[in-house]
Length: 308
Image 1: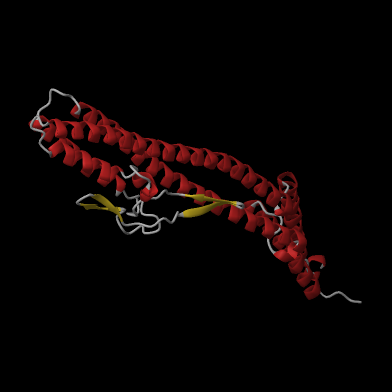
Image 2: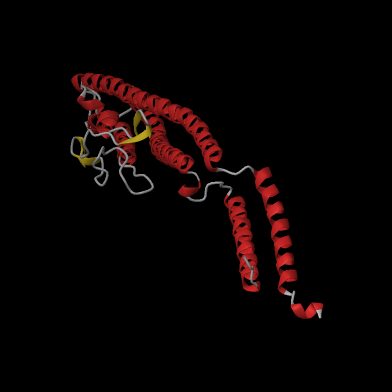
């Protein structure tokens, strides 16, 4: 078979095109750090890598959820820390009110101080997060947890617990309800707002040296002290539970990070490149391409006139 000059040129061009494509592919593999660029390169590896990638995405979402839980619980704990300090102050005021040397005017002054503490406590109970959602209203996040009433405060939220999936088999509450924290879920003496309002009313009621009223004052202050202790214990119990959840989140974060590293390694093993081999191939392909281009250039200059 006679080989024409045109066929020689076409063959040379095709060879250079193939070598150039192979070189570009290797460069793309190196730039993406992936051996498998399309499913057709290795269908089995690509399918398995997709499964791992999807599992990694779910793991990443759990991590995001954990950060949201951590943020919400940290805000709640910060508020309850302030509540704890306030209740300690309130207890000191109530104890001071039992001093027998105080007169009606002195006790009225303490009552005014406690009214300020009441409003401060109400503000803390109606705290919001960075998005403007009320922390202690359950699912009713757009509604303030409490509204002030003549006898204390009324809970306006619900008993629902907002939750997030933080691991495949773990759903965690990101909040606690105001009814539970500030009203003891309706237990006797558990409503801190009612306790405060009752003691304010008690201190504003003149005794005027009346033994019966004096005895009622003493008994009322003792009840208030006990109820404040109960409310404080309730806050501390809630904070302890928050601390346990935060500790669990940290442990789950460590597990999630380790799992993410394993997913990355699995994907690299399935579709990643061997850097040493890839760079070696790149160098060899460049040499081969240069040689082919030089050979084509030499061949393309050949003509019968060079032999005349």
